[in-house]
Image 1: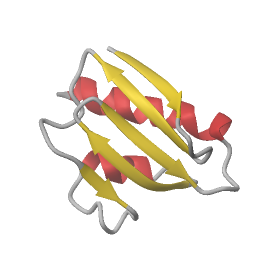
Image 2: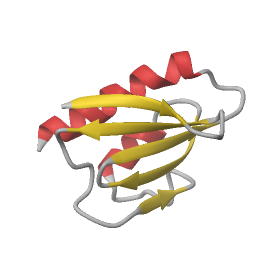
Image 3: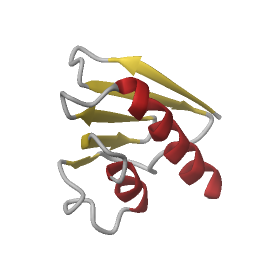
Length: 90
């Protein structure tokens, strides 16, 4: 499985493409807070990363939007770690 962060037009958002695994079976999940994501383990763990503001989850990727004051150097590794852990856990 390969996870590749890609820029988006919004500098506060990164798209994390996932090759070799499916993030969700179908559809689209959009969360703007941890409270909205209640019951979704992946989203809960991503929101636990300081600076994460919203998530867009589809089968092939996750787009993470961060707080403007947060730094991608601090966030991206954590996002990749959470994705890898959830996607390899089955």
